Structures are given as C-alpha cells and as structure tokens.
Length: 377
Image 1 (tube, rainbow, N blue to C red):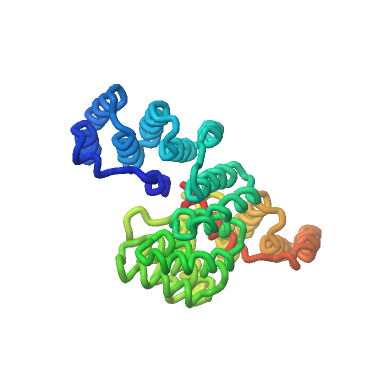
Image 2: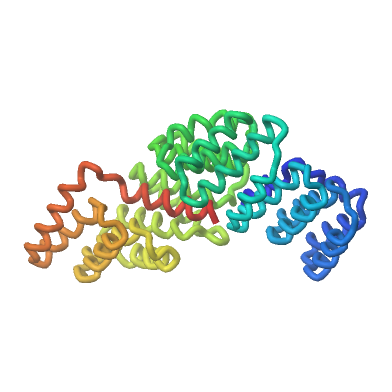
C-alpha cells in the first residue's frame, strides 16, 4: 500500500536513535515479535513522548502494515499536540487506509493548514476520499489542485495519474507521469503507471521501453512482465507475448491475468491445440471469475471443440456482466447460427449493430479493470 510511504509525511524517523521505547518498537517490528510490539506501543502511548517520537512510531507501524495501530499512535499525537498539522495529516491518511472515510473527514476538518504545502496536503486527502467513495469529478479537482501546488510530490502524481487511468484519460496521465518520473527516476511506481498508461493508449513501443528499463534493474519484478505481455498481445505479437507470459508465470505469486495472456498467445499461435489454452483459461477464471476477456476467449476454444453449449454459456455470462459488449453480442450471433437458432442470431445481430459504433476492446477494458483492482488492493 502506498499509504505506508506517504504516511512518513514530515516524520522524524531518526528519533529512534535517541528514544529507547521507539528503538524497542523498531526492533520488535523487524523481528516480528508481535507481543513485544504491543508492549512497546503501550509504553509509548502511556508515556510523555514527544511529537516526533509518536509520529515516528506511527510511521514505523504503518510501514509494517499495522495501520490501525498507526492510527492509534497518530491520534495520541494529535490529542496531545492539537495544533500539529503533521499529526492530523497522518491520522487522516491512516483512516483512509482503513476505509474509515467519515473519521478521516472529521480529522481533516479539524486541521488548520498554515502554508501552501499544507493546503495542498489537505486537497490531496480530500481527493483520496472522493476517489474512494466514487466522486470521481470532485476527486480529480482536488488531486489536480494538490499536484499543481506541489508537482514534485511523487504521491500526488501517482494518485492523480491512477485516477486518470481509471477514467481512461491516458494521455493526461502520460503527460503528467513523464516529468514526474524524470524528477524521480528511481520510482518503480511512477514507471509502472507510465508503462500502463502507454500500453492502454496504444503506445506500445513506449510501454515496452519502460518495462525493459524496470526489468533491467530487477528481472524478478512481476508487474512489468504483466504489462509487457499485455502490450505484445494487443500488438498481435503472440510469440513475444507467450515468452513474457511464461516468464511472468514462473515468478512467485504470479498475477492470474498472465494465464489469460498465455492462453491468448497459445491459441493464436496454434488454434488447433485446445487443451493447454483451455487449462490456462480455467486457471485464470478460477482466480478472476468475472474476467470477460477470459470468458470470450474460452468460448472460442469451446467452439473449436464443437462444445457449442459451453461456448454459449460463457458468452451469456459475459452479457450478464456487460450487456453493452458488442463483441459478446457478435460472438453470440455466430454461435446461434452454429446451432440453427435463427431468432437468437437475429436478436444478437440487432444488439451488435446498435452497439458497434461505441465498441471498445473488451481485452483492453478487461486488463485495465483487473490491473486497477490489483493496484488498489
């Protein structure tokens, strides 16, 4: 979670060098001694620790995915030092990380920014809450204001770009991510979002170039493999798609979407061999039961196997999820003709014609949705 990076906002982590309780907490967290972690927490909460110590303790807990404990530490700091902006900022951010948006809003309302930088931070927090609660237009306004006030802040760029990607606004995302990455060349997150934006915008060479740069640093990174495989798939370069998908699937905790991309590559390289693509699609759908691109491809495999009933079932499942999928209606019309269902074919054709002008690639949309779901969790 990127909260654990952002939550270090103006924290003084080197305070651990001068405070035994904070040093003990850091050691217990590093050695995963949970009982000791709680003991040191209680000592810090019950004592008269300085603001720097409490902020640093909260940051340490956040770094170790203990957001609820981090929130408790920041709340203690905010209660003891009510005028301290950093405590309220970090507390609100922790509440957002815990999906407690009402509590986060309450904290934000109690904060009193005293500089342009602090005002930008409040806009950023509002933007995150708007985004998480479905107010996309308001989120965009707040995140854009935060970014314009402080364009060097990596997290502002990351969250605004992610919102652009969610809205299919890939060009604005690219235009913002390029200078941000130039300012933060070691940022893996910025590079990944730029590669994704390039891939979804059809800028295949640019997307692959960014992926190669990331993989040259660390060949075990899973996400650049995923984006590269998708980019090759969209470009119909199925040989390279097969290679990248296979490499990605060999990594620990491989992204399940790679099963789909691998199946797509295998199917297009040899449409008569159905067993392996079918197995890969089954694996993909086991992990991503609502993957429409997976269902569409599996329907084609079933059709090649002359299992028209299974093919129709997969298509109807797609249409249950997205009744405006022109691609699915087209496939259904084809399958209905296969089984001499003239009425079903005519109905499917009418739906397809009505939607075809607004047709978007199901493969691109499916990948974008799956990727965003991964990034947000």
